Length: 527
Ligand code: DGT
Ligand code: MG
Image 1 (cartoon, protein in one colour):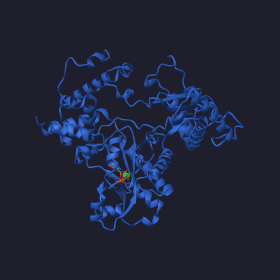
Image 2 (image 1 turned 90 degrees about the vertical axis):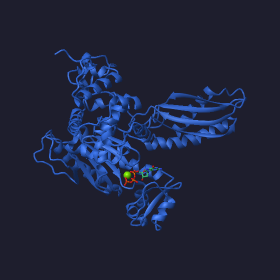
Image 3 (image 1 turned 180 degrees about the horizontal axis):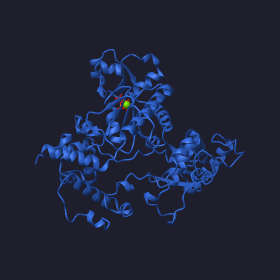
Image 4 (image 1 turned 135 degrees about the vertical axis):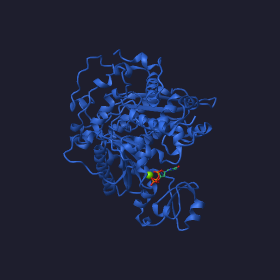
């Protein structure tokens, strides 16, 4: 049944206001024609000329000069050259330079907020909510474009918060341009989805801030469902089967039909996205938990050969560990044994190591340290002997080394180097292994964090990640809790029950139908 227009508008505003309260300030940064810019930085003579980056038979991206001449991303090389015969093609198969630049971009953004989430090589979300001045003496003017096509202005204070966010975004983008020579687009909004979407409204090298009262217009301006990040081709196909091919149809789709086709969780998520609702957090991008390398070869049969292979491998891996800067405390050896029946088996053994503390004076230790390398080689050969019985004949076709159990680059013990040094943690009345409910968790003092030198701040943030329960995107905060339900009870419920409760809450707000025996009633506090 088609919704009447009036009902539909009610649905929009109820959904938009119910779960997203404009409290956050999220900046999305997307680098312009990324691979092409990296190539132009490496070879400035390419600047000003139409440039395409090829992988196999595709132009995966092209600079804006080429776009002006009709070349599009993901065109075949043949079509691109037909459109633009003067197109210069650079090979983009080797991603090394793109990865390196991506790391540099991430580091620059981290100097503005610890909460940076990397999305692919050229996109990052930055949560800058903690940098917003609460009651500024002067109102700030939005830097860049503003997406606002509504008469209404929200009164919750988000316009001022977003204006401050736009100034921070401008600083970040200027910093990227001045330090790395790279231009980008910025989107500023109160959630990740909207920040990403609004950033694409003015390209290249521009930024746009979305005022919260225009979030639904932004969503409605999207031409296809596929333009909503999170709706990929598989979900899109299933929606098409249901006859859902526009944003409006997804917004008004019956939840039971969506659930049947996609499962409750996805159904819920994508309907929320179609209203511009996205409560997901900016997750700090993790550094790798282990660093290692493997080498496969024709069978070797002597300890001497193993030693040689391991020594080469160790040099390679130590270089990576050195670049990473953290210190590992675990070393693992993997061996692939070739059995007489010619099937092969992989086996691993690991042990604790004292990295950088076993030899010489502490100031001279490092991964390049020869004594340390010898010590690690001895450890590796011991591990090898735990896997292979060298008294009987054997054949090995692969060796792998990996370091893990990283602490920060400081040689002091993790305890001494702990976040507690900077931020006294309140003693919990609960057992230490029991996670504190969100309302009781110790929050770090962000102003103290900002004052720390960048290297110490990095260490502190790593400690925080190691010591505090890692932010679980599925774990609710007090503010997620449905009205009338005890937050402590809600937080401890299994995910599915929480989702069901939230879905009921939403349904209740979106429609005027009232159910008398719904799940929420069981969890409501007696009033
Ligand atoms: P933009 O953001 O529109 O100015 O242009 P780009 O080139 O930055 O495009 P974006 O942000 O979608 O993607 C970043 C890089 O990722 C791009 O330079 C090339 C690569 N890339 C994007 N889409 C694809 C794809 O479908 N296949 C492959 N192999 N690479 C892709
Ligand atoms: Mg890009």
